[in-house]
Image: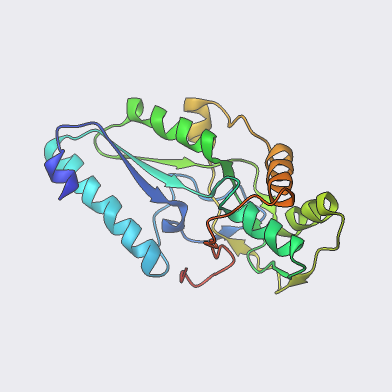
Length: 211
């Protein structure tokens, strides 16, 4: 309904990297040429939203960018905050999902806004995330050093994960400004200072698509 109502507008439609199949953790992840293979109701609903915008783009020549985002992080929410809180609270970090992409939210918004000027018909999918991918175990140990405590782990590292290759968007918009060192340091400092969170875990470690 939204796509049809605003069919004359340049449209940036948010989606998720979870519409892709799992990729090997020793790869750069799925690029935009990878055929979607959503797993679970969340990913299926997001792929359905993409398809609605794709249909309108094809029928009415609406310029559309489809933003496949994962994982945007900030102080109060995101994969890094999830991992940091577990380390800080002495809880084990599940390493079943062994690697992740992350991007600082300001960088994500910067790229999302810029995507309006490259919207096309047919709709243009764009992976918006950071690179390289990061080991969940390494991230937990990084926070452990910042908190001066031990990182605990559970689960077995699987050979695949939801990973996205952002080479195309980085070529268009430039690389994200914030690196993993600053992101982890900022989040650690925030939590140590008693900064609040949204209290909404991402459940990034889930592998069945049930978040």
